[in-house]
Length: 313
Image (cartoon, rainbow, N blue to C red; front, side, top):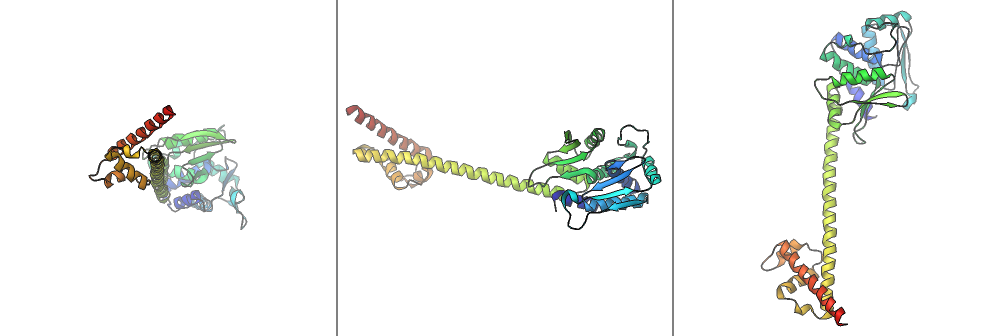
């Protein structure tokens, strides 16, 4: 199952006990369904839990006559669609008018009279998500959206979500292929909104996945830094050993002061060690910067001797 499917199943398990809240939730599912007019009420979903939840609320609150078209066994994806169609024109008009709508309305909008308090607002947002919402698996990214057929309805959803007092959600809107999308991309805002709608486990899953990603990213950055340091150490060591070999080959090695010769011998024998480790092997030990200073002197000495040889030739 997808993360979005699991999230909706969790929400459907949190049934509102108060009738006004059940009405607010069902109203969201109706107004955001396939059709909601005085003559036609049709609800479609690919989610079996949402389908069962819608039927339960519809029967409990209105007991209308309706037909159900369920997917054939084995069907999946867009072919797996549950459709609920009210068959009685009288039931359609009764429900449409119950929620304060008029057949003379030009554009379908959310009737705010059905969302009178904060708890009804919460139930409405949950119903909206069940009807047309989805959330991306946190392993793939952070994205929660409501896909709405009409621009005005999508604007209403954005306005209602922005008014939530329990969490601050900067929901945005765009048009995609003839559908209007209200979306959230911030992981913290998504977890707050899911918690608000009753999907606590889904919210915790996102938080846990985000923490795991942060740990992995931190470990990767640390590993990359260590690799870069090793490469830098290897490159510097190669240049130092090259200078030492040049001095040995030219017979100038013995001209080095004893303190430089001691460091040169250690570097030559231990090319893999860091400057700090080389410094700890000296007697008395010296700092990393002290070892680096002496090795730089050796390189400059070798370069000066090389220049002298070229000038002599």
